[in-house]
Structures are given as C-alpha cells and as structure tokens.
Length: 108
Image (cartoon, rainbow, N blue to C red):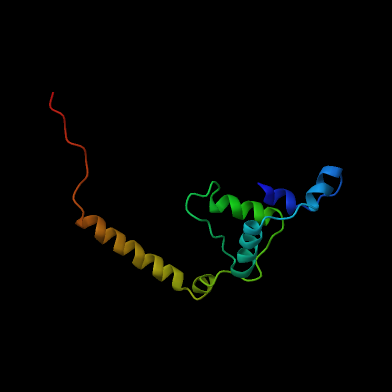
C-alpha cells in the first residue's frame, strides 16, 4: 500500500508532502526497479496482492518499464498465435487421455 503514497506526485497538502519524504522500503524499491528493467512484476508466493494489483498501482502512479517484456517480440513476429495453438492442442490431447472425474451416481 505504501507504493501509492511514496510514488504520488501530489503535493497539495501537508499529508502528501510528508508522503513524498518517506523513505521507500528496500523490497519495494527492488520490485519497482525490476519492473522498470524487465517490464514484469515478480510476485513471491504468499503475496497479499496479485500481480494485476501491483501492475495497476505502478502504472497508475506513473511507474513505467524502460523496456517491454521479451516475449512481446513473439507476438510481433506472429509466433505467439502458433505457440498458443500448439499449447491448446497439447491440453486437448492430455484431457482426452484423462479418466473422467465425475462424482459417482447415488442410487435412490
């Protein structure tokens, strides 16, 4: 939650001016720098907030990535659609091989 306060550009009240002077925790600074360098937000297991929440707040507060994720090039080259199609086929094949997992029927 501190991300919202320490990255805000508001200075219209003493509260916001004080927030601008708060030292950012090291882990938060690391997370922001990783996002800026890679365009991705790394969330450790057990994190309270989801990746989507982190991205929404960072981007909403004007924290932007210096570069985009490397896999975005795949989409530009048209390879992402092929990859996703193959992934779908793999899932479909695996599902066909699985036994049915329906609950047993109760006799009346």
